[in-house]
Image: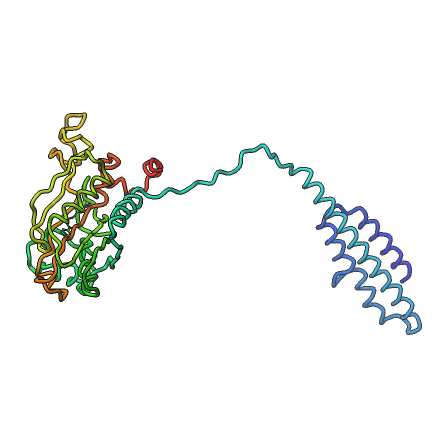
Length: 346
Ligand code: FA5
């Protein structure tokens, strides 16, 4: 027993001292001290020794176990320290390398234009309201004086959801929602997304409008004209060509549409390739706002007395305004998320 103890001690100590990595040390530990290790087997064999020898040999075996455990631990620390030092030596950091660039996001041109529009109206004392994108027939049509089967429903090809619900075709339902809950005086703008079954260079199935309305005891068409003229001069320029044209909306009377002179072809109606300008389709003008005096019938729907209140309302197409501001000749560019396009806007 004493011989095998000596040879186990010598052999294991030599192997510990010459081990080079953590895996080798672990292997050694298993071979000597593991469940089937050599020392473990010797400890198990104690019971076969004569009773008077057991305490002495037991003592020797325990001392050897403590010795081997301590040496294994020391060697492990040494090997780890060496590995770390080697890794640090090899992993030199080149502090002259350029850093990783942080890509800064930009505000989407449509968001920037909506903010600018709302800001101009904020400056004239308008407050901001919002309404749901998924509307009911009553607020989107009925209360705006567009009964079922009215031909005006065809003007706004509608996406229906279920149970009489639809994607709002304009922001005008927020006029109704606001007036249902509040009393005049009201001076409100409503930015938001709207949806129509429409798709070409100047029409998108989802686009944005900013609705605006002013209701009080004595609002006249001249107020509408004054507010919109001031707005257009701010958002475009003093020199921008603007025209008010008679039109029809079931919820306003009288009604107008407001056009801006086409900046893509400068009103010359043809582009450089001598083709009809695809933004104004050769007319020289682009329609951007629908407007008018709120129809008395709409006031009745929300419980206002049309003899006591009057008001104007308007709804403008945000994409069309952005197209004219930035000379963009296809509305679809706003929604394709092409970074080459978006990066042009600071
Ligand atoms: C309306 O939507 C009315 N609710 C506007 C209104 C409000 C009139 C209050 C009176 C009082 P219209 O369908 O014309 O009107 O749309 C208003 C503007 O939205 C248009 O002048 C145009 O600039 C823009 N627009 C209309 N359809 C599209 C489309 N498919 N894609 C992009 N812009 C559009």
